[in-house]
View 1: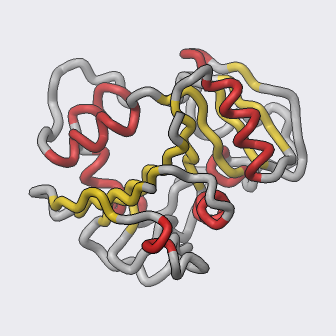
View 2 (view 1 turned 30 degrees about the vertical axis):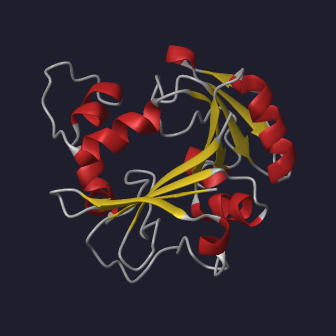
View 3 (view 1 turned 90 degrees about the horizontal axis):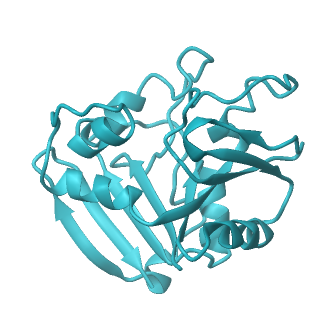
Length: 214
């Protein structure tokens, strides 16, 4: 089963924004970075529960649909779950709502493990103090033959890429420059020699989708 990464980044390679707060956990520029993705019919249906059929179709929606296909488990960092804002609150259940959009086991990498957290819709968060390789072994077992997605954040994705644990990397490059935030490409100078480009296409939104796959 492949280990996958699907990310939205800016023209200057930023995959995170700045100015995150508990009220605005993704930062002020997040909507600009992921706007093409959140406008798709697939996102509206799968994440927002919108059954109206509204939303964009075409290239952006094709990749959005592929994002959800055949995922059996997810790995994310503590920041993506939301632990950085409430590290000592045992009641904090993340900022993904009562029914997170994952619907699979999710393994959260943290220096402070806590009991597993079962949510509505089939998502269970497991908190691990583990290396990328050990976390991947846990996630692979839980995925039951399906794919494992490395969800983020930037440092977690880079750690898995550096360890050569990723099979497929899809980046959706938004036509914006952020000039701040964390860059995906730091320390990955030779990435293209290990992961040849297999797909490069631009959607009407201006977002360019690039797939690297070994």
